[in-house]
Image (tube, rainbow, N blue to C red):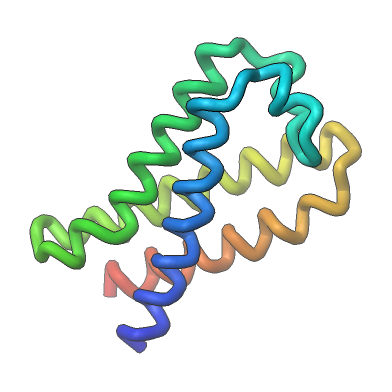
Length: 121
């Protein structure tokens, strides 16, 4: 079970790292043209960058607390925050008619709930 939780947290951390880096450092106009990036058209550039930084912090929060054994409960807290973020992402993509992106969000949501459940227990 511990191995499965590490794998799930690692997968989410990679997703958060890539997404966070992209949102924090790629220009908003470029993001808007990318698949799944249409939501950035109406978003404030500061909001997009802030979201990117939060995702970068989530990548750290999904791995480091448990790996360093410093406040390991923060992995579960981070996973819950990621689950909330994924609910928002799913709703946003559905509102924009990007129905094909919803299943990806659901997979990330399920992984986050699994990590939160496993690390809180």
